[in-house]
Length: 179
Image (cartoon, rainbow, N blue to C red; front, side, top):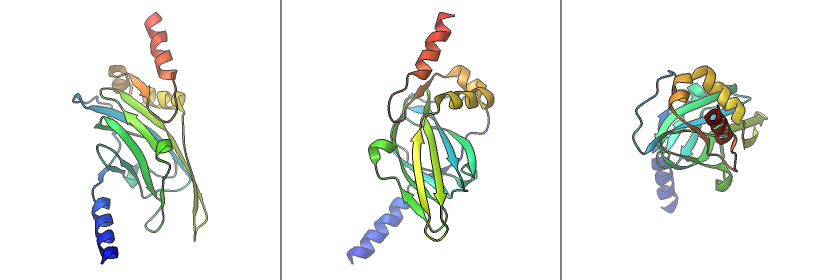
């Protein structure tokens, strides 16, 4: 009986995440006071089924945006603290990202919040092993925004919201004020 209840609760929780895709057009949205942009870099050596992120809005990154190689995911989200929770490698295998402190990040209202680059390397077919790391590549993220989303970047400040501290974006903003 308890096992049945646990399975039902897990299935209900799995269905609570909204599937989302990355913004494709360089048009700055009118964000409400409680929304900001999330920018997440993803590098993987295989096509992934989904990435689940929990927070004020529970979301699941679509497989359309997380193909083998390197890409970025830009999305408008409710401000607050989020956690990278789970990576589905395919229909059979998934990896829970258990160290919450390491996988947490903040989305601040009205800004572009770069939270890091999720690097996933998977090897083995029958019992795959995955190494996952969230690394800071702020300069690469800025180059991506300048090339693909210059209008949004012009209208918004950018900050680092991932694990650890980084004042790279603040340093650049201060350099532009001096000129």
